[in-house]
Image 1: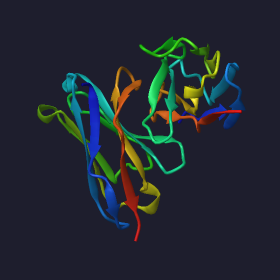
Image 2 (image 1 turned 135 degrees about the vertical axis):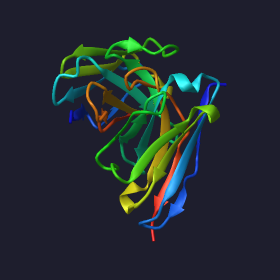
Image 3 (image 1 turned 90 degrees about the vertical axis):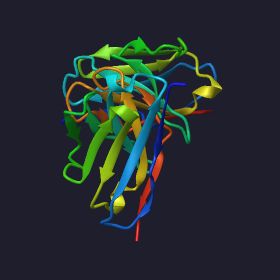
Image 4 (image 1 turned 135 degrees about the horizontal axis):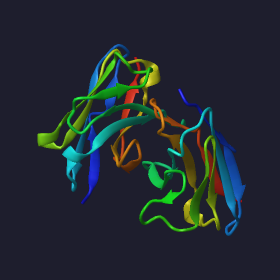
Amino acid sequence: EVQLVESGGGWVEPGGSLRLSCAASGFTFSSYEMNWVRQAPGKGLEWLSCINSRGTTTYYADSVKGRFTISRDNANNSVYLQMSSLRAEDTAFYYCARDLVGAVFDLWGQGTLVTVSS
Amino acid sequence: DIQMTQSPSSLSASVGDRVTITCQASQDTNNNLNWYQQKPGKAPKLLIYDASNLETGVPSRFSGSGSGRDFTFTISSLQPEDIATYYCQQYDNLPWKFGQGTKVDIK
């Protein structure tokens, strides 16, 4: 089955760190760019970051630049989001999304919830 | 950054009604625009890409049109299973941006 499964969400205190994982299956992972998108509870979608198929080029939204790092392991069909210096406003569902071509997100994971609170 | 303005923010319509949502970009997107559907508690789902191309498996009652800065998403005959929030998204220039969403429910 073609799918993406996120993991690693949870509760963290402000200033803390968390690493999200997204495991891909059912398709040739190494052929696709991958993205992270988040959604605060009851709010809209916010694109965060993307990484090219080889893992050599990354881009970030200004809201997370310098705090979040995207990476991937094509041997293990996974993409990651290392999050540090977390703030209350980072509380959200985090989705990984496959990029069909040029930021057309044709496959999404189910999301993982990150809660930043003291 | 290209900003996306969607309207309305919510609407109620009857089963069988034609529903139209608009999305305006702050600058030309060269038709690099997608539409997604998100049902409550679920991940978004791609419906339309390149402004007017229907994703495989998506019912033909969904359509997209427009060019440049102004785009329209249409449900030709609203069905109960179409209750969801719909988002436009530009992918002409980084950072990729979504509209604020339009919540559609049944009257």
